[in-house]
Length: 262
Length: 199
Ligand SMILES: [Zn+2]
Ligand SMILES: [Zn+2]
Image 1 (cartoon, chains in turn red, cyan):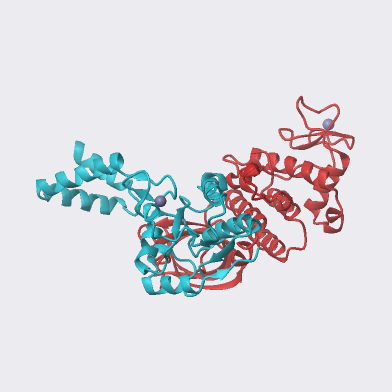
Image 2 (tube, chains in turn yellow, blue; image 1 turned 135 degrees about the horizontal axis):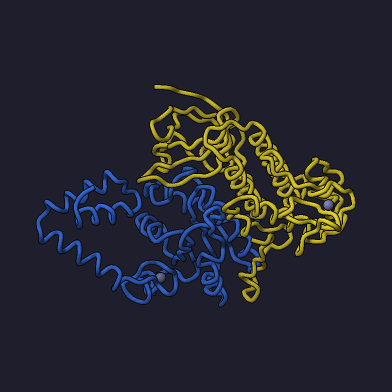
């Protein structure tokens, strides 16, 4: 039998049979792996809660014929326990996990940069040093860039002109007046500047941006991401902004407005 | 592949949770060789379950009538509601004999990745039950795993401003597991040791 060991972040778990789970995990060296965790749902499982989504773990697999099998696991960072106590950050993190799965196309195709981006993004989310919405948009933009889908933000995506007059998803980002297709968005200069800051990782600039520009930026980034992923990001609709926590007044209950266009 | 109805049976059984193709085949052949009276009884129960079993209009638990046995029982404490994900969790908690209040079955946990948000669960129904002020404590007994915890966080944030005592099952419950698999002793202890939630 062949064993291998890696470090990874659990992206998703699915129930399998009576007590097992299939774990989807993005690893540092092996890429995305689907493996069986046997007996993990039993209360006396040796794995306990270590194989929950968000867990950053040191894990050993046994190569199987169809699915690999988890044989040992140790937690490096239990991000999930912290995130589950903060609903907006939890839903933000889930959208990051889903995106990480969908932007790493093949199984066992190493993608160190996607792994590092995800770990960095989750750490920032747990540290709570920036608004969750900014962290999510920065993560989306950078993971799109790693996957080869970075939007053009400084120049017209079609002709390279620096006179930006709009943003068109189908064109691949910012567009000049001449290249602008019908129906292109016309975001403010500040919103485009915010997108650039987030893509570069310039938090000093991003943190002082205004709420309306953050909203516009989020809308564009989400639409751009959804367009580039065949099946879209399902959890995006359920991401809750920190500012729109529902009140318990029954009349307004259920009005949990989607942060992003689906 | 088998012929006609045998394969159909294997296919149908294979759709059940926890039943893989091999188990489906084993169960199908078990049914084929079983006593015809036994099989007829099984078929009858399967038909009846859809016709006769409802979900309690108050708590969402499975019920033989419009309201479940627990909601109809006047001896149960009307001031305490225990919120669980599934009906099978009600069964698990009833076995402990620790809890004398009533239940609210959500119908699952919030799972954004599966497309399940708060509006897809019976949360509105819970809020309606709490509106008249009779209930003073809500115990959140969602599964001790990530989705269960996040669901409890969501509910606690919603319930706290209503001035209710909101507690969460805690001690002794192993993390990562399904509530229904906890033994009665552990689950009973978890009720005694429930903690107040600060959100
Ligand atoms: Zn142009
Ligand atoms: Zn009931």
